[in-house]
Length: 185
Length: 146
Image (cartoon, rainbow over all chains, first blue to last red; front, top):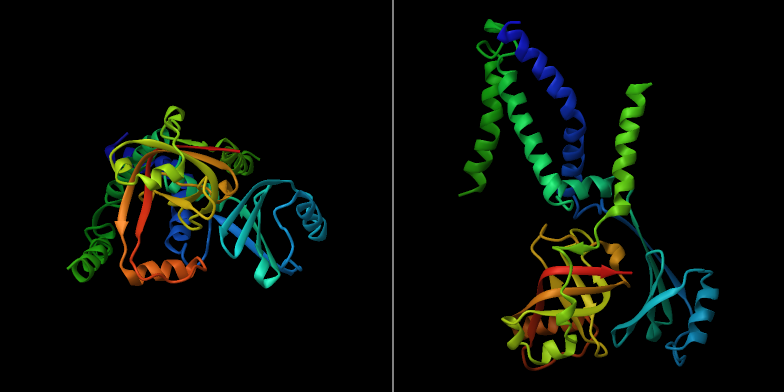
């Protein structure tokens, strides 16, 4: 087999292998770039309820039982905390927090749910899995370098990078160079 | 059939791996050094160099990047923020209400009067006339228990 055919075969097979990883990094890359506009890790829902609290001793078991019944919540309370003088928090199992505002007679129910798939993709992108994933990511990066370089030799002659399509390669280098020139000074 | 099953299996593995998310960071906190948060804050300078382990209910977590969490002190209305560089550790929002242990040191940041009162306003507290200091706990290892 000639080096040209070998290169094409390797480029194709490594390309197939890289599809999954590329999607993981590309999708989570977009999600993390825009995390200030859209929380891709968690879906946070808040619902407000008006419940008489002023003058009530909210640090009692009886009150908690009544409150959970009123809110039709079946979870147990696992922790309690005065966030500040006006906010009392009750932490429930299953990732629910109740914010009690006695002065405003208001109870805010906050539920936190990890987003399906996006949370897992971000988990990988931010290297929360640590060492093993880091080494695998390095391996993937090496494969990407191979894909980039081998792409230059996929087509022979003027129909390849030695023809007008070479400008596409130059454009790919020019784009990051322009950003560095404009924004790094 | 294989072409359909392979991506389904990959996604399934990824989703179910979430259940195995580690609740310890860097090997977990050193449980032999537990010091009450109130003690730490009353001797702040000492604990800027001396390592200690703090324990408290997680009351708030950074929603976007998981780069900080706030622990409740043993003293009413007192909290301490555990802060890491982005990516060093990622604290899950689902840690709220759980008990966290963090081993590390304290960092003391003096605030201006304006910054002090901005923070107090956000906490529904009355303004003060003298600037305060902000305490942040920098952990080297953390354990989060249910």
